[in-house]
Image (cartoon, rainbow, N blue to C red; front, side, top):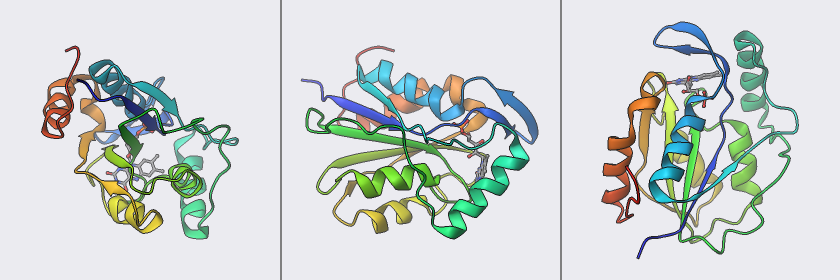
Length: 178
Ligand SMILES: Cc1cc2nc3c(=O)[nH]c(=O)nc-3n(C[C@H](O)[C@H](O)[C@H](O)COP(=O)(O)O)c2cc1C
């Protein structure tokens, strides 16, 4: 029996540093990984969309995210998953921002009840991997059952299905398609 998975993620796209230079991503790195996970698990996707998302301009986004992080802002989201009850497993994905989860992810963690839920984290990054984001998640939801995560370098997101499969298998999750 497969486990039913919900893949909840935040991803921004737009201008970003990938392997040291600025590129404009039509589809964000974390979005690419989330879609791959949906395919591998036959899971459902839920994208966290802030009412006012961060700018597509890199420098503006840097200023906005630094301000939200230092002020502890929880940006309003357009929607939440209706219920987590149908799912055995939540896969939670985000780009590492300043070593932390982006603040829209913190909104999700504070407003959904994740006590006793099994959550497997995944992130995309440019070198910090998870940074201290897993400690931030545990501090926000002390009752969470947070499993070992997988960190994918931004430049490798289109070629990570094998790594994701290995990670899912290590958690006893069957992969339904390659
Ligand atoms: C505001 C901002 C802060 C970032 N901070 C970090 C960081 O602390 N460590 C890191 O390795 N990468 C950092 N990055 C790079 C992103 O984590 C990386 O580009 C990620 O793949 C972007 O995912 P997305 O396209 O799904 O939004 C940062 C990027 C932005 C825009």
